[in-house]
Amino acid sequence: MSVLRAFSAMDMFKFNNINLDIWTETYGINFYLDYLARWPDLCCVQEAPNGRMMGYSFCSYSRPVVLGKAEGSSTEWHGHITALTVAPEYRRLSLARNMVSRLELVSDQHYKGFFVDLYVRCNNALAVSILGVGRGGRDEEDAFDMRKPLSRDPQRRSVRA
Image (cartoon, rainbow, N blue to C red):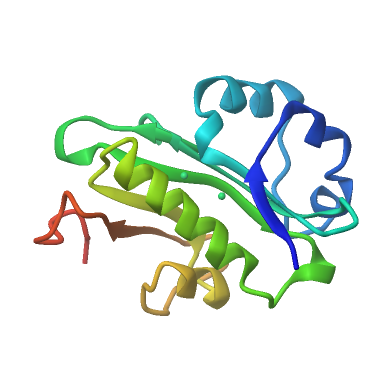
């Protein structure tokens, strides 16, 4: 059993088991603090019963989401998943999917976004499956701008081919 809770500045002292993984993109302290100051409700952590961090996500709202932010304007207003990572020992437990679901909920209900997006390398099939976009890709540097429409976009106009 684990708990999904808000990310706090003190968590930066506890996430080395996640950030030292070769697949995790890491940022400077100022970057994390900026997100926490601007979008605290879009930053979360999954924590094991023993207090060990299992994963974190940051989503945002402002132009280019689990780090994340709110961004864009008009029908491009959306939640952007900036960072989403799970410690190697806790993978394959649907933690990432649960964190994305939380970010979608906040993006939809609080920020009233039209969609949530995530940039992911085309050859990362597991990450591509989290938002339900098809497989594909040309090389390891190509990336999808994956978009999942929210309730403000019932006609799915935000989804790109």
